[in-house]
Image 1 (cartoon, protein in one colour):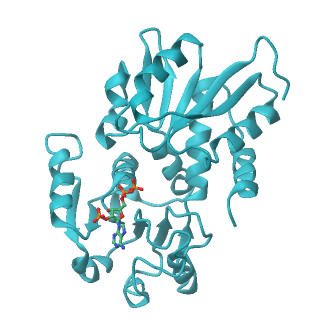
Image 2: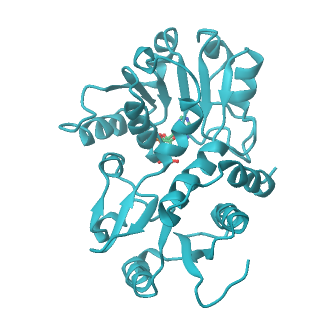
Amino acid sequence: MKINGKTKLLGVIGDPIAHSLSPVMHNAVLDHLGLNYVYLPFLIHPENLKTALDGFWSIDLQGFSVTIPHKQTIIPYLVKITERAGLIGAVNMVYRSNEGWCGTNTDIDGFLAPLKRLSKQWSQIKPIILGNGGASRAVVVALTELGCGEIRIVGRNQAKLDTLSQSWENTSLAGRFSVHLWDKLPQLLGDCELLVNTTSVGMYPKVEDCPIELELLQKLTKTAIVYDIVYTPRPSKLLQRAKSEGLMSIDGLEMLAQQGVFALQQWVNEPIPSEIMMNALLEAVPK
Ligand code: ATR
């Protein structure tokens, strides 16, 4: 990469940020395409968020990714967010407009990319989502965009499930989902064609943990898809079990790559080869 007077800036904000794989995967694609941009990591402490946004604006940063802990707290500082980002309540990608910084959420595109390659009648499919945190919200919005039937969200804390439900009252999501405590899983799994894990259970270093027991997994139909957004390790215990049962399995690495593809595409206004993003990630991801 040759930096010169015309080099344009992109980046990612977070706290911490040193572990982020985004600079590696974005710069790999920018290099490959010979685009005169550089994508940098920015460590921004929460109290500096507004100052950082003003500074980014004045140095003509073209756009940036947003990670923990800024995905929700950045919203008040943006002049506009997309409907999907509003429903999730989180922004992972910020772009410029004449009026100021705007936000959207490309985790949805990332999550959906591997599913959209499959020929399924999504309106006939009633997914189950394990977990009720930030990732779960993005997955629910994604699956409603895909046109899935009733989405069942399973959590371990009734109060948190109720708060989640209430946050979507009077929105386009009302009536599209239901919430359940974990002990209802055995009844729900029988007609489930898509099981998504959004909890951190099974993530490195607790690689032997699995969000559901093998006997429960066996209740799924043989054509079901098990999608674990965890990508360290690959495969997670859940996906190992799914594979051993002959079920289709998808992990979270492509989601990570594709959310970047959709962001970069919008910033540079060019088609982005997703395989370059994916290969850079495969090299960078902790084994
Ligand atoms: P993220 O933003 O990645 O979704 P999060 O907001 O911390 O992260 O959400 C993680 C989800 O995994 C939560 O729903 C959490 O359950 P609680 O809200 O009850 O804490 C769920 N989770 C984490 N560990 C879990 C475990 N051992 N069993 C079941 N659910 C778990």
